[in-house]
Image (cartoon, rainbow, N blue to C red; front, top):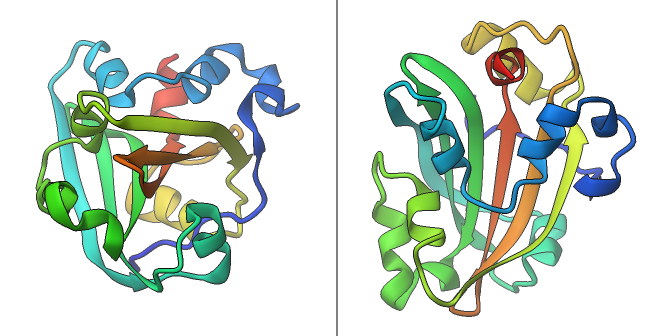
Length: 184
């Protein structure tokens, strides 16, 4: 099942025409601060569940997005939960050259949120936030509906951002699950 294949057609989140119809969700998708902090602010017990952490071979599109010549990367897939309810599915791609030196700690986060590291580290910056809708025929939709048991009655959005940590790239993808959009 893992790693999950993600969409390939992205547009800038702040100009996405369908997302504009959901202002509360758009506020979350376009948020430049940590989603970990926002989920924690919802007031119930916060946790990170690691679904997968493994080696992967980057596609050409992923290499271009990451601006790397690395072919190999570490992929980490987690869900951010409020209580027992998954609210965010996140997938991070970290080229091997990114997790060398002081950034090696990224490969050993365990159940710690990546956001806790990224947003508290000097030398970390974020590129544009892009988003797209999750299509019903995708691996991600199957995972959301069959594994997480969250029916996709309304549009489900995923965003991605290229981060730079001390000039080393990592690509963070975050899907806003139906349980979150229903709670907004």
